[in-house]
Length: 147
Image (cartoon, rainbow, N blue to C red):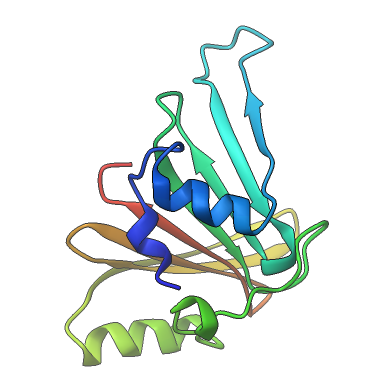
């Protein structure tokens, strides 16, 4: 399954409806109930596959979260099955980008006692963001370039 193909698709597109129906996905509407000026969003989760789809207020798919490890209700995703290359450490992401002339950015921080690192591939129409917590791949985020 090529997940990046779905980016920028409408929530009610035939492709997403077919995918969501096949996996019995319930779409949840989240609105700005505290009047903080935040945009409304829609979420569709495939917990068993480790996937969460995030739509903006116009119901356009703007992010796909792919959980590399079990996280709450989400099972660990099978990254190769989803067409996502898995890297065991951030240095491998950077090396792969350099070897394949892929534009990338990277960073690191400590947050609440946790070591966080990330590296992001920048393609012409989307990005793939790898997030590491305490040295282990935790989350991959796919986003269109105009997100």
